[in-house]
Amino acid sequence: MIAHLFGKVVEKFGNSLIIDVHGVGYEITVPTPDFENSALEEEKKYYTYHSVRENAEELYGFSSLMAKKLFELLISVQGIGPKAGIAILSLADAEEVRNAIANADTAFISKASGVGKKSAERLIVDLKDKVGIPSHYGATEAKYAKIDEPDEAVDALIALGFPLKEATLALEKIDKNLPLEERIKLALKK
Image (cartoon, rainbow, N blue to C red; front, side, top):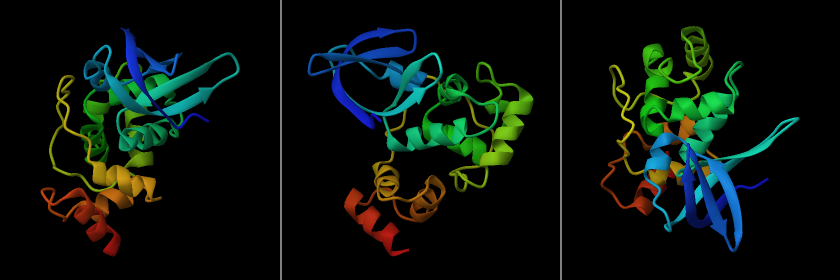
């Protein structure tokens, strides 16, 4: 399996990028926020999900490990495939999508292309207890162009083996202004 790619963005089309990694071009499908924040000729790292089906092999890319893990949770829900997962993550940045699921915001999730009200309800029932507590309460707005910097502390805890829910819970009461290493140490002590 291909875990991540680091290379130069050489082409952009649709919601796909071609990443040149030492002369080999990999086509990856990315959520809209990652697509909009990728510039041609820029070197970037994308965490990837390799989907193998009977008639196709596809790579899906994410700028943060949290987004990749959230995508994996999304496609674990019956009726939500990779294309619907990308559509959901294209509504806003990964933290906003996670927050919408934690807040049971079916109206927000059902705005994704190919995701109806029943699928959104099933997704929330299946994932609400797996994504952690909400970072803020209330309805979520679709913000295609808004991108917060991914929380590297969440990514680090996930890389250390924490599930997404536990990683967000461990960091919830730790000051975000502390240095990254300090936040991780404090989270590990909990």
